Image 1: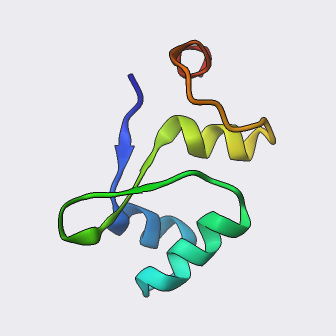
Image 2: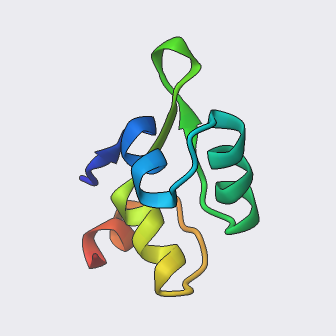
Length: 67
């Protein structure tokens, strides 16, 4: 199971203060994300790792177990 990064953590990591800018960054980098309570952005650590490793997005547990 992958750890979830909160919107606040993403803002710190990307340096953006506005939700729309974080979302724009995630879309540009092709990092899949979803929305949580209060419409806040949520991303798994595995999705970030795949993007940093330049691997294609995957929606299966086998890929998450790899990281």
